[in-house]
Amino acid sequence: MAQERPADREDVPFFDGSASFEREWPDLERHLNEVFDASKYSHGIKTEQLEEEIRRFTGARYAVAMNSGTDALILLLRAAGIGPGDEVVVPCYSFFATASSVCHAGARPVFVDVEPETYAIDPAAIKAAVTGRTRAVMPVHLFNQMADMPAINAVAAEAGIAVVEDSAEAIAMFQGGVHAGLHGLGGVLSFFPTKTLGAIGDAGMVITDDALVADRCAVLRHHGRMGTTVGRISGISNAASISGTNSKTDEVQAAALLTRLPRLARAVARRAELARLYDEGLAGISEVRRPSLVDRGVAANPVWYVYLVEAQRRDELAAFLAAEGIGTEAYYPRPLHLQPCFADLGHRPGDFPVAEAAADRALALPLYPDLTADQVDRVCRAVERFYAGGAR
Ligand SMILES: Cc1ncc(COP(=O)(O)O)c(C=O)c1O
Image 1 (cartoon, rainbow, N blue to C red):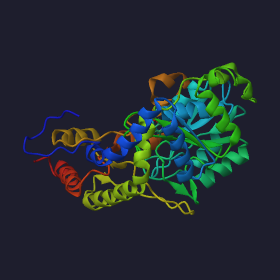
Image 2 (tube, protein in one colour; image 1 turned 90 degrees about the vertical axis):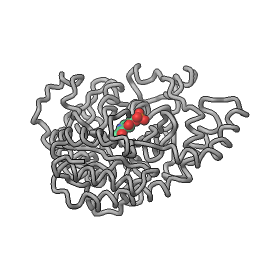
Image 3 (tube, rainbow, N blue to C red; image 1 turned 60 degrees about the horizontal axis):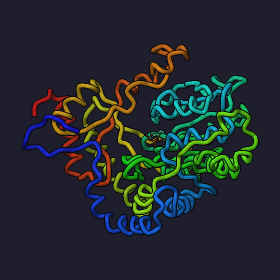
Image 4 (cartoon, rainbow, N blue to C red; image 1 turned 45 degrees about the horizontal axis):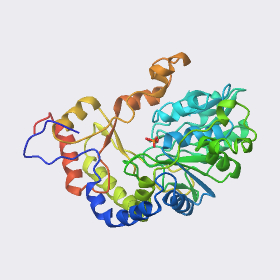
C-alpha cells in the first residue's frame, strides 16, 4: 500500500507475509518439486493431500477443495439443494460473498442484524425472518470467535431449516469440541492470503460430515465431472444447480497450504499474543472500543484472524495512520442490506442499527504472525497521538 509517511518511520503494512515465506521456502520447494514431477497443476496430488490434512485437522468426514471460499459457499448452497424461490437468512454485516453466494445459487438473501459484541448473526432475529420459503440460515464466524451455534441450531431445528456456515474466517475455531463449519449441514474455509491459513493466491474448501453434500460439491466443482455423473446429483430439482463449474484447486496453492498447515498452531498462538499486546497498548484510549470475547456457555477457543476495534472518527483515524505508514482496513464499511445491488430488497438506513453503527466505526489493525511487538506498539502510540490532537 503506497502511503505518504515521514521518511524516518518504519512501515507497518496491513498485511505482510514475506518473512514467513522465506522460512517456509525449503518446504514449499519440496512440495512444488513433487507437483512438477507429477506434471499435473490443477487438482492433483497436493490437492488430495490437502483435503486429507484438512479432514484430519478439522475432524470433518469430507473436505472438498475449490478455488476460493466464495465458490465453496456457492457450491455448498447448491449442493444443499437451495435454488430459485428459496430464501436464506444471512447476517447483514459480513464479507460480500455471504450474501452474493445466495444470489449465485439462485435464491434470495434475507438480512437480519448482528450481535454488538461479536458481530455474529443474532439468533433471536433469525426466528422473526423465517417465512414459508426459508430453506437455510447462514451464520458467519467473524474476526476472532464463533456465532452462537447452540442457539442458532435450536432456532433452525424449530423452523425446520438447514444450517450452512460461512466459516471462511474460522479455521482452527472450535465450539463444544466441534470445528467451525461442522455444526450444521456444512461450512467453508477460505485460504485467501491474509487468512489465518492463507495460500499465495486464491483457494477455498467445503467441509461437511454429510456424504451426499460432499459428493454433490465434488461433482459441481468440475463441470458436473464433465457431465458424466450429473445424474448422481439426485434431489436437486433446478437445472441451474446441476450444471457444474470449474472450481478445481491450483496445485501451487495446495502446496503452499500443505507447507503452512503444520505451522498453523504456532501462527494462531502468535496472533493471540499480538492481540494481547494490542489490548494492553490500547487500554487507556477511551475513544477506541477493543474487541471482546463472549462466553457462549460451551468450550470455545478464539482465533485472532482480525483485530477489529470500533473507533470514534474512524475514517480520520485511518487517514492519520496511513500518513504514519500504518495500513488499516475498514471491515466492513457498508452493511450488505445497504449495498446498491440489493436495493430491490427495499432496505433503508436504520433497518439494522447494530450493523450500521459497526460499519461506521469498525477498523481492523495490522495482525499477522510476522508483525513484531514494536510494530504493535507503534500502532498503539499512533492511535494515542491521533486522539491527543494528532502531533507526531
Ligand atoms: C466471511 C467471509 N465469507 C466469504 C469469504 C470469501 O472467501 P474468498 O475470498 O476465498 O472467496 C471471505 C473471505 O474473504 C470471508 O471473510
